[in-house]
Image 1 (cartoon, rainbow, N blue to C red):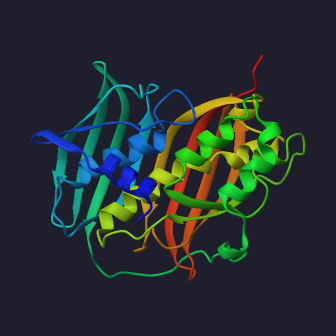
Image 2 (image 1 turned 180 degrees about the horizontal axis):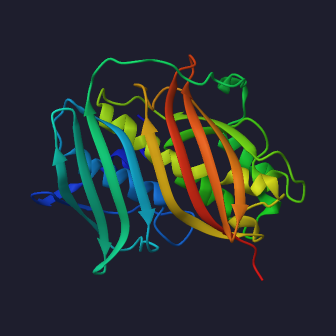
Length: 290
């Protein structure tokens, strides 16, 4: 297993300090605050550890309330909202320095059969034909305010093999494009057969690129180029079908709207054989510096 993936798995292995209370630490991020995907994934781990093993996560709804301090531990308190025969609901509050920084509601369901249909998978190239982050990012080093961003991005994403189908926002600054973006991703190593682990890792990755399509619509490069500032506001995911985060997943993203200093991203995540695994929606602050 890649050592970066090993470190990420350690990050998600929360310490239980009391019944329904867990503690997590943070890893170094590209920016001086806790990465939102980390908090969401850790909160889902906390929720998942309080439900029966046969209850699988089927949805989460979350709000990012305050910027997290990467130098301080995060305490996750789980409220057992409902334990039903089919559905189980948990609420998680993440706290630092005595203040809530994140709120998650998650629902879990025991498996049952039902009606089946899905949106078809869009066309996308074979991920193995696309450049890796190590091959792509150095091409754009002169687009960033700080050339050291390349190394920090590579370090922060070393646990995940994430490959853009087309140029990322910082690769086409000043050239507005259709507000759509596709990336393929999988973990850099095999994972255990724990459905909660795969769902939590997909949650972690889902916060990395979802607002790219907002930037593409306006020819903006992103926070690292200095032409926007932003942060995640809320995040929702629905887990439709089984998947593995250590196998290729297509993250097909688009932005239907930006207004009022906010941008909306929505996406579907497909397995490589075309099954719709996850739907995602996120709104974030996207402001042009004055």
